[in-house]
Length: 254
Image (cartoon, rainbow, N blue to C red; front, side, top):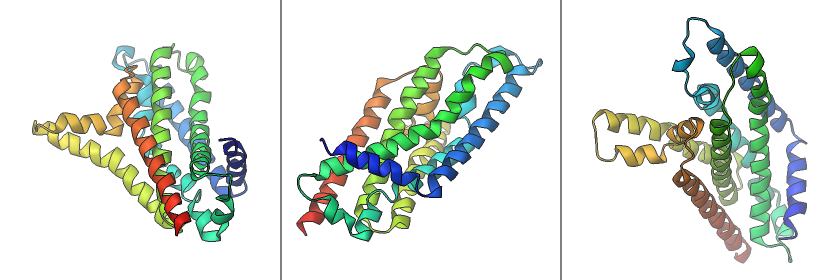
């Protein structure tokens, strides 16, 4: 695994050689700023009882429709070129020369995507200390830590999905659209399907709630760090990375 660091440094540098990373970071900064001031406005209204706002972290992040839309767009944009561009330009053949292995390449590409994903979340963390002064709200660290861990493992899973689709095609647009479709399924379709099943009290409502990303993150934001969710994220991540390695191995054998 000694080559992972070198490949990782190259991919992180490549991110900032194009305007895409800067535009995505700017978009998340704007969303964080708007969400922060919305939460401050809620907390400072005299007519609003603070007891009704039991989970401000969800109001700030997971309850934001703009945040979820940005995630669904950002992950495909950040991962679509990781392997697809290498295959399109023909540099994947030189990259996969001994002693570099497919596992090292996939792991480095995935780590680059994860680091960029975590960078997108930094603006939300930057505003948190100001809640104490501007919002006059002493937030608890438990829900914050739980949400940070949950969003990290979720991002690891999402990025692995993007890496997989980037591995199976040379076309970056196809990779991005495929990743977006899967994220859309995990985020919105599962939530709507659960709402439908819960209304009718169907037997499969609870399993749907378990896999619905929105409800997972909502639980994290209230301080409920369910280890089953973490195992689900990490298991899916490992599986998608394994498939990505196998795709690259099959390309080498051809």
